[in-house]
Image (cartoon, rainbow over all chains, first blue to last red; front, side, top):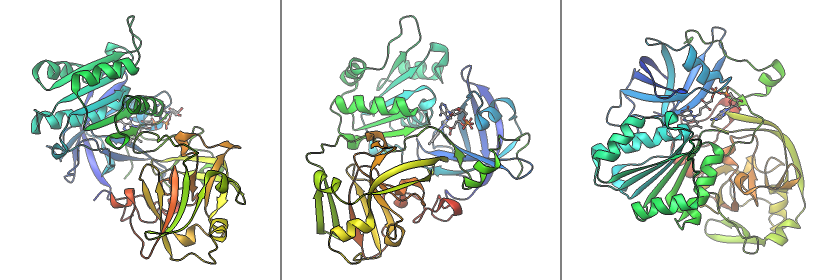
Length: 234
Length: 202
Ligand SMILES: Cc1cc2nc3c(=O)[nH]c(=O)nc-3n(C[C@H](O)[C@H](O)[C@H](O)COP(=O)(O)OP(=O)(O)OC[C@H]3O[C@@H](n4cnc5c(N)ncnc54)[C@H](O)[C@@H]3O)c2cc1C
């Protein structure tokens, strides 16, 4: 049940980018989920004060007992700051889930257009990993906007998938590289020309990114009912 | 369970007292929605009250905008954990809507608010009448921006904000309490932030 809190143990921490770390959590109780869903994490101080935040699951649903979260450190972030500076392997945290309707299942098929801004790639990684295992023939394209090449989460994996998986293509939009471009109508048109007409589009990132990207998809003629958005905050 | 090493960044007492459990204060106005912001043409906008499938009354934008207006200022709480204080709304109270439709009382005890994006959410009628809910058409003195649900959104501020359906196009009275979009997906049927009713068994 989504509503029951459980204890999870941090069994691995690895840097993904200078600002994003991956946390591997061993769950006390298996938590079957759909690719794209998130969990709520709860931290409790000694006097009982609590903070809760949502984090998307990066790992695929194949393993419901060990999940990966990827948390970006924000300046002055109450919870992301704790994960960045304090959390260690062996620590226990509380979480509950799975939560949310931002989800893809193999039976939904494709083509699948995934649009990510920054750490918004996290739930889309779960979808890509799931697709590769379950339905590798479903065409998928990840249009991923990040500041610089160093900020691309799971970069090696994504490049390797793009090389090895014939039905998957990767389009990186690096906004702060010298040759940087922004995500615009032309970029969307190029992606659609490569992918074909998407049956489902999933857009995830900051408020501003997700709103702008979803509008661009509507402008490109994709019916609104096929577009799902997930917004991480500001 | 105490989390090792977590001290937290506590809000001041006056803020903490206004925050329901698990919420934090934001000065921004984050957006929660399932998909793109729908593009709504005011010339074709209509607001419809229905009982089941049967239309009871409908208004064009101009007619709706001419109904008696109500103001409300206070705190709103989103299930994604942010709360925003002192938000100022203006619109047509559900009491005034029922009166304008010529109804002495609501035909049933429950309703589903319906959005132009086909979103639905259920609210007991008693949580909307008696001055508790409105169809808002203004925020902070201006028309409501599309990202925040304009031209019109439901406002039921004492429940989690997913109940305050954006881009609302009508209210459908139902005989029973019928689950809407999120309620079918594990969210609470009622959604009281002070009892932290986020998910179905909370
Ligand atoms: C459904 C959902 C899924 C999410 N998944 C992820 C995920 O996979 N990985 C991840 O890193 N985050 C994710 N987030 C965001 C996460 O829940 C927190 O909002 C984020 O970690 C900030 O919390 P904090 O306590 O560190 O910052 P706070 O202490 O709340 O805020 C610190 C400062 O950062 C600003 N801020 C708050 N949130 C954001 C934001 N998202 N972007 C920019 N500035 C912000 C605040 O205004 C403040 O100035 C998700 C959010 C949602 C709603």
